[in-house]
Image (cartoon, rainbow, N blue to C red; front, side, top):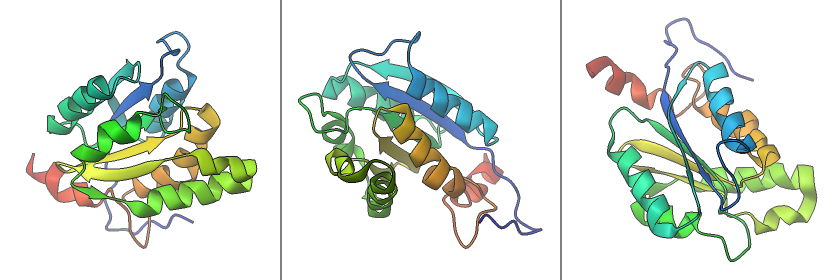
Length: 177
């Protein structure tokens, strides 16, 4: 599916991973571990990593700090997007967004439907951009993170993917830094 062109340089992006859960710790954060490893395997760097209990204001503070850091290009969150009283990611992140990427949530739910059926209806996965930083918010299960990464995000962060990708947006930014 991914086509490289001879004149397209490979871009290594700096990513941050935030796990939103009141039960996960550094010792059992399988979804955060998966995302950090997947980022590295794709040739990018995981430059920040944190776990938040789900407090809207703590999530917003972490994301705001990362969005303000010019060395963070991509933020990947997992957790806090399901149908429960702990659903806090959307409330925390949405006010920070300069624009939304509606297609991410739509495509994630379609792919997830093919895997788990109508339970995907309970996912509020979404994406957007804030201060030139892309933010992808996905469910907390490792399988959901794998679906989002392998089927959507990985290609879109590959500067050689055609016909378009998000990574090429950073070519000019990285050349001037």
